[in-house]
Image 1 (tube, rainbow, N blue to C red):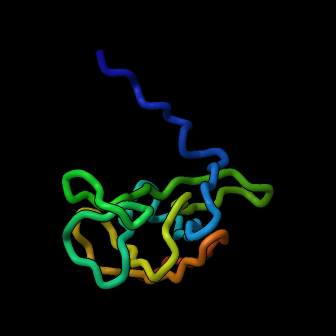
Image 2 (cartoon, one colour):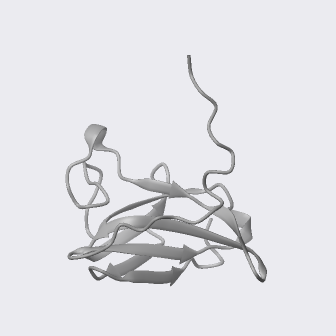
Length: 121
């Protein structure tokens, strides 16, 4: 029997799994993108397997997360959070196969912050 997904699972803190050659990526997003799913892959990669640690992922699916609103002291903040990404350059693109919108350079043991362009879906 399927269980209902937790409707509040994406709105709270996210545990980052960083260290050695693994970093995290946090992208500030426009409020209009709430619910948008965004994939991440090593820069220059095309369709094919990859995971957030740069290893092969089943079924050729790239890891992805959705834009969620998170409460802050100043109100809501819309963001993508990738908690574990192998260091190197990575491309972010709207799913299922949108164009690359943002490229980030990830360093192991750190959190890379970026801002999604306002004029992109």
